[in-house]
Image (cartoon, rainbow, N blue to C red; front, side, top):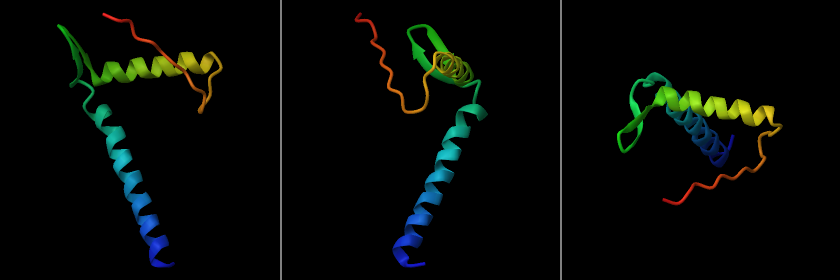
Length: 76
């Protein structure tokens, strides 16, 4: 394997390990506060549950990976 290919494989392997650690962190810290707005706080666990619920709804609505969706937040 030439040096460029070996470096690319090592870089991608590091990226996968880093991404896996980043993905586990919210699960391992589910009770910690993720977001605060005014007096309202949301934990990582609740945020994960809300994201999974939204994923399920969008999947049931027929969306698949690669589809584009948009959401407009209200002005204050």
